[in-house]
Image 1: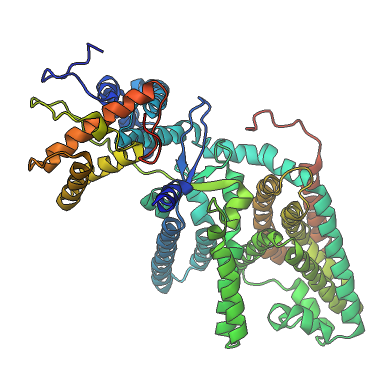
Image 2: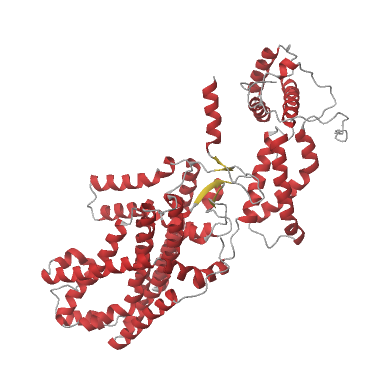
Length: 288
Length: 342
């Protein structure tokens, strides 16, 4: 049983990075996962295309009525700014995130913890030219001339593939652009403070034997916390049954109450250990 | 701990409860302030909140440290972690104003980045010149090469078989006024895209950038080979020079930025490969952004200036003045930037 669990916990921590503030506290940043970042990129790409289509239609409609060549200039400059500026300008603004990243709860941050400067943002986004736009333009050009053969298509796809999959091949999920700019993308999600589990109540609490409380460690305690907060009746019943069986406690029909009391008692016991410097990571660690 | 007694009369059980009672109000206030800033209204923040922000942030940080060591309530720790992270980025990660950044870019950042690229700039210049010489010689040797190098679209009738009259017209003819600005915009976007490419391509150990820069020089040489033998060398040089000193300089600089990345990755020297890449990427990015600005100027000179001014002498003068201006701006020794971060 041990290796799988250790692996699972390593997975959860694989995307966390130590990040010490000037005050000396480690914030343990969560890096954005490859999937979230791909989703953010797709949102941005759709937004860019949508803006481009709408602007083109509007400008074309205006052109039909006024015939001003200034409109052509507006379109060309607009296209250039949209293509090169969407990511750069949004990330240079205070939030350090494009609309897609904001929706997905991501933010671009300098890896060394300094403030994110303009040159880093320009560098990370200029690399999109070779990651994405170059093969696309190349493919588009060949296709429009009718000369796109299998080899060219494969080459363009392979080229993009190398760069698109690049974040999957390094621990920090860095794009080529991130690598050059000294940035990474972290998760900044707002979480509300969860309610207290060990709330004091008027009813007397259940009392557990020392043997019953030495069954588990912190990992199990926090898993129990998740189960209680999740509020899934089946899960609560299953967990309560397991603990009762292991701790030799008779079933009193109140699963929720039993688990809450057990959680509180276990928490008190483990916290008491913490205060004297005895941590018990999980049930496999030696109890005292 | 006798003080921590719950309203119901029972002693408080876990540390998290005591902790929440003592500090929850401060956390909530910090959360509210940070949320308002995240929505983009730092200015709308009352002065009290603004002054309280750093204090609340430190309180939250110390709460986090204490919670990690004494409490096993994961919801509490997760909450404090995200709160501190968000507050950290609002306090430390916020950019200086766009205006200050722009000023710093033009006063210090850009010239400093270009200066630091001097070696790469020389290499880039040499490649351009070598490309031009080779382009000139092979087109003089066999005119068919011209089409291989330049391509039909770009040539626009200015090929070796064209008569002297046609060629002269392409240099001195003035187009309609309203087409000029459009042409300028087209040239700018096209060239700026190439500049960004040659920067980004530097990532592949600078090889594609070197090819791009050499090819750019070869095109110049190929055109020279068309005009010079027909006695239009002086006119053609003026036609190129009015904007070319700016445009070619910009392309050479963006190529140099590409070289810097490629060489930093291939030969990081004493630093780690990652650190070398970051330093090169950031200074290269500044030089490339500057090159885009130069190309904007070049686009206007080419699209508007060249079409309106058909006198050789004026064209030479403008081209020379621009070149001298850029050289002075970039390479004139100046005090180092005291305000630069880091």
